[in-house]
Length: 308
Image (cartoon, rainbow, N blue to C red; front, side):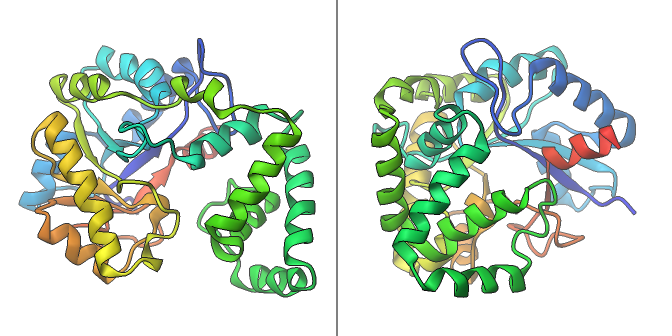
């Protein structure tokens, strides 16, 4: 049975934005909206929020959301939304807009475009990870297999899942950065050459808000495991994000959890900031567990359904 949720998007390609793993073209995005519109009641973000707060959402009501403040979303997806007079949620982390580049997106661009294909990247990454972890690697592999890690994202390959497990659960930021820096040096890859094409600016955010889209929180620096931070650290992440976005677009009422990760402290912080709605990154709960746990379907699962 259908249940109300959002559709989650990240990457798009076209023009200066090169194709990458899971990215959509404008035409593919438009086709997807047609497919969704035929099966669901596709609402604008503002209407979705109003119905959410009044308890009037039906099981077929859905909306669209875009994470990470990526410039490709503004260049490729927003014109399609404008043609349909459809507003959406855009969840933005502030550090990159304030001149503090986030390696998460730089590393993604590197692993997508710095190698012949993603399998070549994984082969080199896993070899360096094995050098770092040594005899502990087999123990982590067993834990990964027992956890059935990221089972809620069936579009990920086994290598996709193993890479994310190593990155987020085993290596931690410091060792992960060391491995990626070594790979970038090996490939003579310069992050400065690509940063201008990765993220929106404050002027883009102002334009989105002026067009009726809802710009919301996504933390300040996009930790992949924000639940590992204590209350004060999490509060700083969301407070700085909140202060920045309110200074740019005015009131901020919505958010999504970076990498779908949060805990009870996160929920308390969001309530204290006056956030009205928050989104998860998967569909593992059939109904929202609270105002900050609305489920989302990754667009890649929609692609699978359309092709099925």
